Length: 246
Image (cartoon, rainbow, N blue to C red; front, top):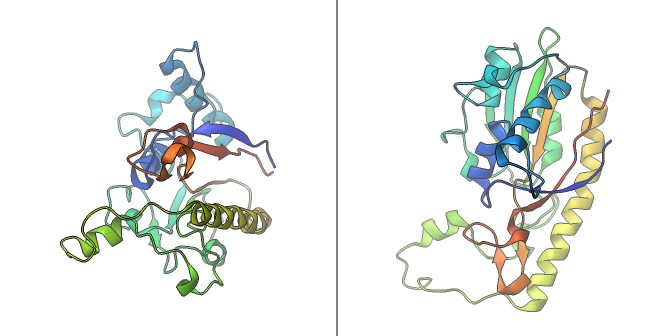
């Protein structure tokens, strides 16, 4: 399908990293001795190959610089998004230029997305699929939610803000807990490999799909856990695979 590359997200949190992706900026290679703007140019030039068209000029994406709008309005694509994480819900600014935009009922069921995908016979299709299995709590669809780790993200923090019983700093996870969570994420990736194979089997020609889990994650490296307001290479590091299926 393609070679796995070590790349880096432009952001360390779900919402801003998706905004960059939808600007058409795939995770970058962090090249030394290269002018940064040349990296942008090279990335946008690749859309000639990705979309199977000739002489796509970067200027054609301006002034919006938003990939779903460009694909829909300039190239006639049917544009769809299925997102797993509530921070990307349809009321957010990321919901621009999509014919349909769906927050899935479960954050960790990519296979359910495949069952809902529809492809137009008259128009090429673009799908953004945000998968949640690799995101905290690193859970598979058939797992009992009661068995998952209980370290809340932004929604848990907001929900309990002002509650004196949870105010203040929470205890940093133990080494064994960190290892358990990392193993859970690895298991989720292995599970998703199989779902990706199923996706490839159902995708017709003239379809452009971005599948993302958006940023890196830390499991105790140099005293860090999680993602977001952390400056560490591992919170930006992501695997990247690009492939033309047919």
